[in-house]
Length: 107
Image: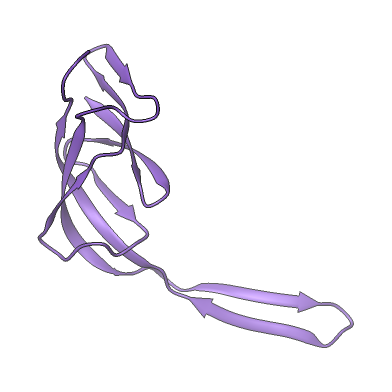
């Protein structure tokens, strides 16, 4: 069984026990979160596709780690103009472990 969820502007294909890294900090370590924006669920050959989301479908997850991702360097350069700008950015992240996938009611 797997599901396609939408979280913080990104789509993820998840199944039970998967760990995914979401580039946003939205919960503390140890908390449980629910993803209600489920786009699709496939279970034993049965596929349910939402338009755009499935009603009643929920993916439960537990936050295992939070922090910052490695630094990304942003470098701007214009040749022959003496223009150089260097900046860095570290994005927050949450690592979550998928604990349950609920299909919800069928039509």
